[in-house]
Image 1 (cartoon, rainbow, N blue to C red):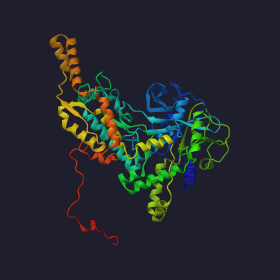
Image 2 (image 1 turned 180 degrees about the horizontal axis):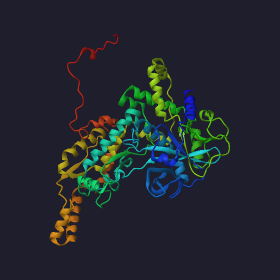
Image 3 (image 1 turned 45 degrees about the vertical axis):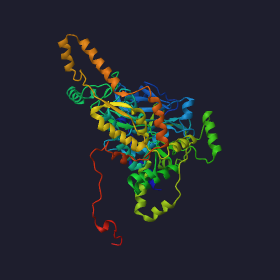
Length: 573
């Protein structure tokens, strides 16, 4: 009843005041979740006009499940957003669904809850890729399908592409990356009991909020001077690629497709109230509550059920669903389009219940339409429900006594989670780093820091990393000006350049990883880490207290002696 009243008030009070899609890209509305409805057969390729003044830009990349386009204005300037779109081929459809594996809709759902819990007043989500609107494609009639999502654009590369280079030897980069990632994980674990479940270096990206070209010449020159010279294996790869793109760096966790919210993790990180919120969130999602999207000046609405297509019990229905997916037969859709044959505002009955029959389209289907969810993210509803129940002890006890519903998983997902059972995100990330950074040569000046990093890896994974050290020679062309004066003195710039390249080549032979036996060592690390881990369930807040990440920081100790009431509180007072 309360939800219906909220929907009615929103439709009548103007909360759903419609913005153009271009306006939405410039300034997000933080009070609601949005869906963009694409017309049936709408082409999604480079140069396609999305809405007035905005079109699909160049293709940034493609993976097994989806491809990513930049969203650009008509003049080619970026909007700060990208669109991730599902592939349309049969193999991708088999992989990108919740019967066989997990679909992209799961990533959007997780990202939406993260954004609701962690978004800052300026609209940023520190440490996480920002997930915005979902894309829904009309399949004709009242059927629809989830086809992608709108996300914040990141400027940078995957951490793996820098760290895996054989010449890499920058332990300061490793420490800053882990410090930022574990800080973001700690915030998410406290709020939502977040477990990424696939947190390797490929799922952490560099992000440069301000690019060099966005700075004035004076600011850029000052920032470049403060950053120092480019050093192969330290802040640039040996071939000169992946130089820093700006004066500031942020590390973002991406790809939430396998993530989940754990009530036990929330309880261990932030106590009982956080656990209650996550349990309430699970119950709401397990009840398959539908997210309703609508607009006050459009007769169209969309209903999206909670992501779970394995609702039927037993093995035979799951096998039947898998075969239907493999053969390309239509499955029961979790998305449905409702239309009302009216002009002007949508009646609250259509939003609250969605019981009206389907009527042929009255809208203009030439371009996408943006619709808002007036109920807001499920996380906020869960917080409100927990706050109400905690004020009422009887309702809280009754809720705790009720059987908790759980979302069913596909068989492959269940096997994957069983393999990673009791192995948290901290363990997963440090194990992948041990695989790549083991048996490297580091600068003598960083010996203490490297040993501290090896201590953290051993404490969590049980892996004793190998490390050796050598003296790092200063680069002859470090400041640019010194190289030029030397060239002028010798009268031969080419000879000076060759000497510098020879010195850099010698540095690459000294620093980095020994290649010939690394393959065998990697398998030893994998087996030891999975079979005999030390503290595989370590929380992010516990990892942050390690001297490698918090040198010189003391944890609070108990004062002794203390007052008697600290051990024997008087509850009757």
